Image (cartoon, rainbow, N blue to C red):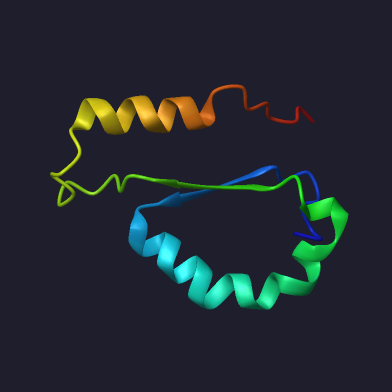
Length: 77
């Protein structure tokens, strides 16, 4: 995050990714996340894109992922 200070959203692909984030990544970031610069970062767990995730229809997955990316801007070099 210090390398990419403009990060505002972190998308997690499915609940397994969400669980791994909280178990493996978040504990290492506790001190940094307490810094006000990181308070704006939103963690967004989204439904897995895996075909094995049949509980959520493809259309719903598409809508949720599209909404998550809506409004993102990319720096132009």
